[in-house]
Image 1 (cartoon, chains in turn blue, purple):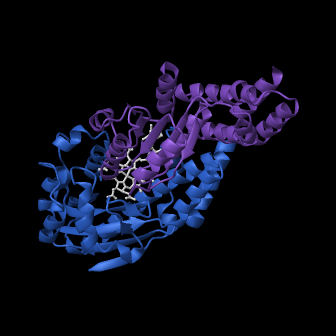
Image 2 (spheres, protein in one colour; image 1 turned 180 degrees about the vertical axis):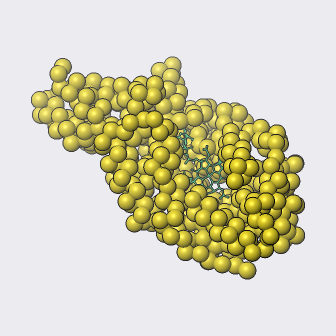
Length: 237
Length: 212
Ligand code: B12
């Protein structure tokens, strides 16, 4: 079943510290007033300009296997290839903040409001990620009827371009999910329009299936350690 | 001269209005454009760059200073053209065809301009022909290429190939950057330089124009 979800802005508003961290500012830094003002203004603009929406579609494991193979460009063993066979349920998803927020960011840069543009960009990137998080949480909730003991179950999302799933996987993902229904289109280069969009699969099953050692070939070139944090968070849940 | 210090200090504070007023005053006092640029605006921006590099200030402060610099530059620009004032180098910059991602390229352009380069920003989704033609028409010293994804970064090689066939490869340098790009990739496709951020791009291109 495919569902289109209007996401509430309140649910995806990033924390100030995230927005700052996206620009390399750690939480121990005391902000000058003028920078705090720019941050406050960016959060206000985020609220008025973000048009978050999502699309999610249940997908049988066999169908996902085909989507995962994509254009045949995944490299050797990958975390995703080892995780999904253990899944009970899977869902493709895409989420976008819409075009307006990117238009505003571009406008800021065109009119020399660089700090403002950068702040809003950082907020929008964090917001797009939160949108994906919302869809994942929602999916998890829906699954709770299907299990006796949901506490042993974990749902995590994986995206083309991460964890060995080649970015060209976007093509088959789009063919199946049709995110065009919420205004996301895919370029030949597999880049999504609007820019502040995230796509992927939510994989649900026993928590253990998501645990892996990060010593796959694809891990060698990857300096993103968020997989470790996610695995740890799942363990602690 | 006191006015240069005032310009540089106002710029460091990100006070774009004051920088514009002071620049106007300097022009009214018949101070040479080149000197206002070098000893006021660029001198101020150099301090900002150093402070940023050593984590004494953060990105938003650099960007406020850059806005202030642009406020001064806007006043100087018409005179720079008239008096044929030379910048330290000219860079054509843009995001590769098929890619929409602007922010990293924008930051690099801002830093380069702050360091005294003339920057021609072609925006995003830029075809190879446009990079090469602009570099030729404007006699650029370097082309800066940006990409967000591994699939768009391959378009960098298309630009280099076209530069070769148009016989400007080697004469116009290529500097690349963006999230998925690396030094190894730069070597692989024959790009002259790789830089991991705006400051690094400034240092790299400054060293190049100095040695030239
Ligand atoms: C924020 C972010 C996003 C944001 C949007 C990006 C944006 N900027 O608007 C969101 C959350 C929406 C997102 C989505 C996706 N993302 Co993303 N994203 C990132 C992240 C974490 C930071 C990118 C960023 O904006 N940095 C801030 C800016 C200022 O930095 P920058 O652009 O890199 O520019 C700096 C330098 O690179 C350099 N530079 C840049 N250009 C130039 C040019 C020259 C000439 C020079 C010298 C230097 C230079 O200087 C700049 C200033 O310091 C990177 C990981 C990373 N560590 O970089 C992944 C990353 C870019 N994303 C990635 C992926 C895969 C995606 C998605 C495809 C995932 C998915 N399936 O949904 C989507 C694609 C979005 C789309 N529209 O198609 C991958 C790309 C890998 C690949 N295989 O191509 C990365 C590298 C993460 C990873 N896997 O390691 N993403």
